[in-house]
Length: 279
Image (cartoon, rainbow, N blue to C red):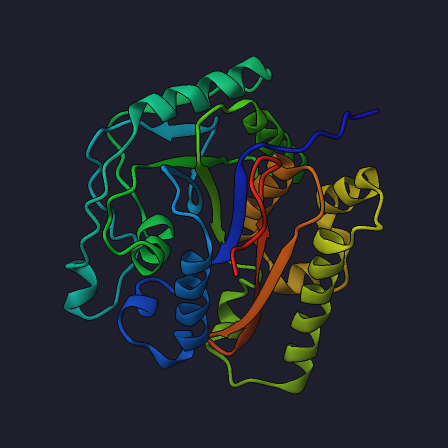
């Protein structure tokens, strides 16, 4: 039987929207922008942030280790200002080393990457939440296997991190069917999306759900109603699995927002050594 533990690190899964649009005043991201700026104001300011981005995959987990990472504008077809966005936060090589060590101690091979910069899965939400760019950041890749159980295990391994006031962010999207973003909305599509969002909400937040059952549901998420409609490819959901694996318990806080016309969610797990959101 898998041991269920809980973390001493705060974890937050957020839906990061469409490319740079949240930073360009796009009205279809208004709720998301308000949600993230409000959330940042309600959290104690972290001393460092570890981001698991849906936009980086590698055969084994890789961790950014450059002290001053550049930005990767990993999108195309946007106005010129989208390629002039700046987010000059420092890296944190010491934290990167701790992440690699925690993964390898759990039997998960991992590598430092002292060349790669930060993709928009990091700089878009963090520019909204912490615009001063004064918090050291590290980014962790997904595994290219995209196996849900492996990403829960990555989260569990991160429980070994001992870094004061660390915030771990899973930056993805709880709905990510790209063709549907460009179709006219329909009641059927909205109902299918809502059914899956409801399943995620119940799975991640129900305190009465036995933890072994919650873990099993997350590992076999594709069996949920409309799962593959919402996620034809799972890379935008897997940062949630890492956050859940790290937390090892029901999420304390859930917030919903419509992004690009689609219902999407945010989940927050405060650590054992912190209190819940400040009033």
